[in-house]
Length: 354
Image 1 (tube, rainbow, N blue to C red):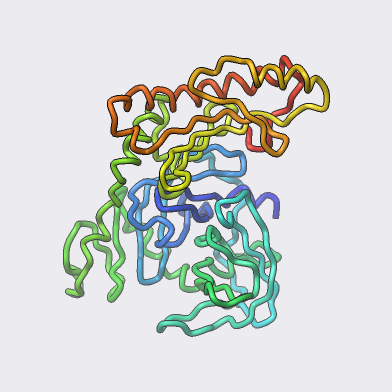
Image 2 (tube, rainbow, N blue to C red):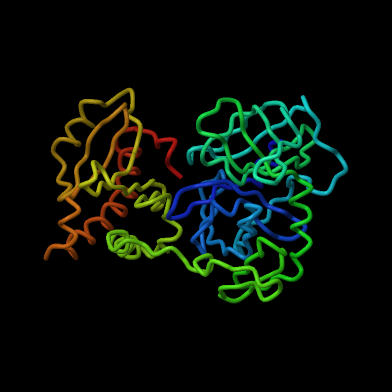
């Protein structure tokens, strides 16, 4: 199981986070369409917290399946077994792997409640295993590591009721892999033919196609300004996105967080270190007296933070460029300070550190 875990990844987009898993035979990442909807490029994040730019190659909105490829991704040796003869049956034990709510890697267990639950004209595996937002696109496996299904949804008004796309449905979708190119391809919801160019109808069966499926979601002007600051760090902003108007990334060893607070403020912060057991007088004095310029050192829940807050309207003022520079400087300063607290005061890195 531990070897398989390294082949399951968090998928980060400007819309939110989800889960995907590596298919060794086809060198693809498998996930749900709704996880990557509106994106041509996303980022993958493994348990080591490294992120990799990942291209969306194929989506089938009707089946809620998407195939991705990351050229720089270190290829996992052990992966979920996709080709097998095991059939899912009621009361079978299943294991769900993923990143619920964007949290660190999580494993949950349950049983199959119904292997062929009919919803909206399609069959799904129903399970009582804990499934939450962020699990979407993750594998549902048995104890042998064989793929039983792909998490697709959870009814918000029902407990102990999660659903997965059956492995058989997914394997049929893999048959088109050899026909894919390196550019975005859409699967027709009617005939399942491949549509490789933006169009308003399927060239194979004539079914109407929503052209917006080919379009990438536009970022807000506010988001573009924040990503301008991130670009100053020589980081591709796509690698920093962790949800709508939310950015989490690492600058060196320090985790950097940028997000909207109270609907009016842009808050940038970094959890630097855990407080040490000794030298607290010295570390308190440093936090209170050190000149951090526009940034602020503080302590919360036994952790040291470096933070910077501005009103969103300030990004549209004459001080915009100064503010963007301060945002970038917070990241570089955090990467220096976490080492300072370790070397000079005996503090430890937080579990958020890389």
